[in-house]
Length: 224
Image 1 (cartoon, one colour):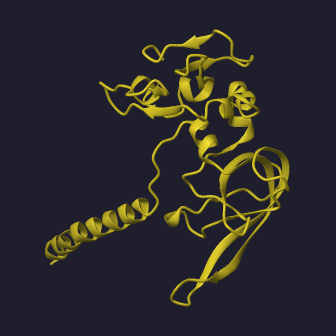
Image 2 (spheres, one colour):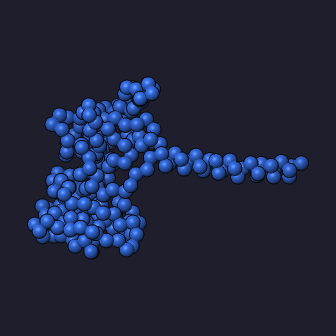
Image 3 (tube, helix red, strand yellow):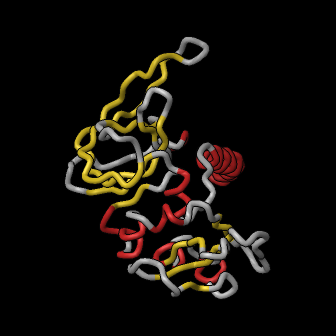
């Protein structure tokens, strides 16, 4: 009898395991983000700020087209510096209530400082998702911190092209090839941490490294 029960359990376990795997996969696929270089994230964002989060709560944000209430997490922040954005300070940031729909969870103790990039909605509110560039301030490199002030903005006319596998190429003079994934198996590699893609005097773009203002220290796109 015990052997029969064990076999029955095993026969149920496989479908249940598959069901659980599919459910987890669906949740994971609910929010899918393409890897992005910090400079490109800066250029794509409407707002980029350094801030502390002091409170978070769920709020209603109107109704959808079917009359169902739209819930969001409202984070109250203490803005330390704005690198890009509107003239007025940002007091609140909004996000979806679940990571499955790209909602962002931030620590609300007020002790951690974050770099937060996001979008402005029509009503002027700042909205963030898991696809935005959001990182603890002390995790940024010195180059990344310096680049927020000017260098990333200088490269917004350039395009950073991610290389997922070899071979890969650029197709335009205004592109820089981002090869961290193939060289280091990480999207947080040397180019992401220490380089910016800057337009040169001949209107071509190339990788530049350093914390001093760009001069001649460019890295050719064929040798990142």
